[in-house]
Amino acid sequence: MIIILEGADGCGKTSVSQLLHNTLPLSNLIKLSGAPKHVDSKEWMMEIYDSSARFLIELGNKSHIILDRAWPSEWVYAPIFKGYDPDYIPTFQRSLHKQVDVHYVYLYTSPDVLHERMMNKRAIQPNEKHPEKDTIYRVVDAYDYWYDTFKDDITATYYRINTDELYPQQVVEQIIEEVGLNVKEQDTTYSKVKYSLTGTKGSDVAKGFAIGDTVRTRGFEHVDDKFRRGEKGFIPERATKNSAGYDIRTPVNFTLMPNERVVIPTNIKAYMQPDEVLELHVRSSTGIKKHVVLSNSTGVLDADYYSNPDNDGNIMLALWNTGNDQVMFTRGDAICQGIFRKYLVADNDNATAERMGGIGSTSKGV
Image 1: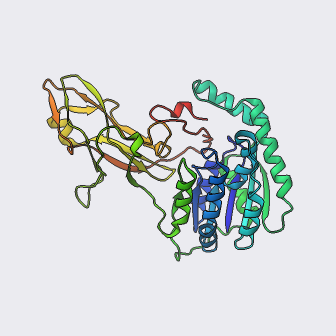
Image 2: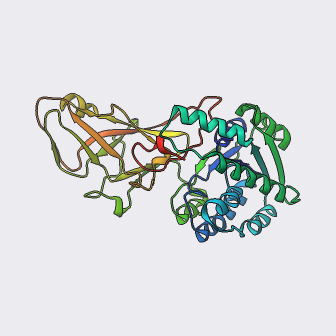
Image 3: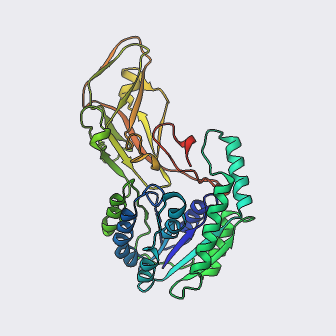
């Protein structure tokens, strides 16, 4: 079974999908964070959905798949923001519906409520970019038109839930009741895994779908050559089997004078699940023996920093020599360590903004 959560930004899709994933004993959460917003080519989008079909059918017939945004968003947003008609969507849907059970859940939120939420966020984060009122109305109208157009399609099931006065947990309970989900089912045949299909290019997302049995969870990669600054970086590794941190090494030689601060690009990037972060800490030997610390104390890399358009997710080390002596580092020296962690969200969390760039860009999302 595939359960697709749709609705305008601010309706609470992300919170609801995470809660639903945690509630269902046999479920997989897929967040299409690379599409449709960051992919502006019709051909790329067609490649994404063509490549995803086999994976979705196979996994959907084994377990519950929860999609936090999918092809209905492309159907809604493409004409408004990309200027093309995604006329391939109905054909893709009909083919998919014949081979797997699909349920669409439209989380309707009235434009006035969405606008109020955006205004509240704007007051708290004045530098963050939010849609204007007229854009909100256009998007909601487009979603209403999508629902009215497809709701009578007998090859799938469509639900409309008004979320104006509901908390995410209440929305989850209503979804469970209307779809008829069995939350007491215990089945260990298939593992409960959370997938994240990301990328700024259609081919990246399509590749994530196509590999199916080997979908990645977290790890490190080299940044694209056009974003590399200096020598190629070192893929972080753990020193021992019980080490929590992955040693992060400098790709260049450099010297830090007393009280000097410098930012060193590692030329590597990290991918992870939507509800995880990578924390950066100085190694004990760096801080205790050399008196070098991170200028920001602890680095926090969000999942959406990966492959961002500004620097491709290049991990930067902001270093500060707090000692009285100059300190020399040689290419390959382990300076910091990265630790992957999961994080929690509050019950009434409705974060919808998306990263628009690299370092310091989370306050400039859209």
